[in-house]
Length: 358
Image (cartoon, rainbow, N blue to C red):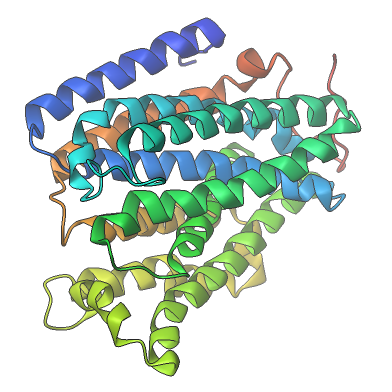
């Protein structure tokens, strides 16, 4: 049956996971490294991205997402866990060249404070949206707007501050948006994985959810590819040689990372684009779930490539952290009824979605 979490058990499990990761960091990576930055970004992005997709579907008066509200809405509880990882990573902030400066925006205390405040606000707002949307409250639309706006701002700033600022003074106006789109795509993939237990169902409601997620994965993988390519095309047509330093370290053939750069492009766009061109594959939970793992792995590798040329990343430690967070995230999704206080809705045969008891 597995472990079922309630709010108290979730809090204990979160603290235990954060404490274990803290000890692993001290033992395996006592010098400043980037493994925890990657883990933090991946799971914060997929949790916020998934809730943002539900919010966007609610704003567009969609119906396909409603069975996911009580099943995947519990992903908002991953956001505070990411906040704990941010706290665990505080001893590693020396990887940022500006961390000891006294600038108005880039200084240690303000950096820590603003991220903790935004993470806390994002959790509370996402939790409020999910709760109101499940009850069918009209206020859910208001909170959905706030979720979407805050997600776009937050993940854009994560890209700028957690990754781009390591190479300061290099900058790119597209970089933050690229990380935001990557996080949203990982959220779509996470939702696709949550409906894998419906793989044997053939009713219209289940197929609609799976087809919608497959189509979104196809579309936003292509949108991600557009941003990936835009990093290059803007430099070319704008004749901006000062922006080539960052990319030349990571994608040029003379670097040790050229293969990984092309592998990322293949995993996140080429594979899902080729497979999902066939309509039937969009409703095949085995296919979409496998692609979700492939794409999420490619996005994780993307974050690694952003750091590896300038910051050491301990790969065994990264696998440990990613594994622990994956187990906790799976337990949170499985325990959605206990965390949200409502039974998880599952489409029934015939295409109708059962009403949620209050």
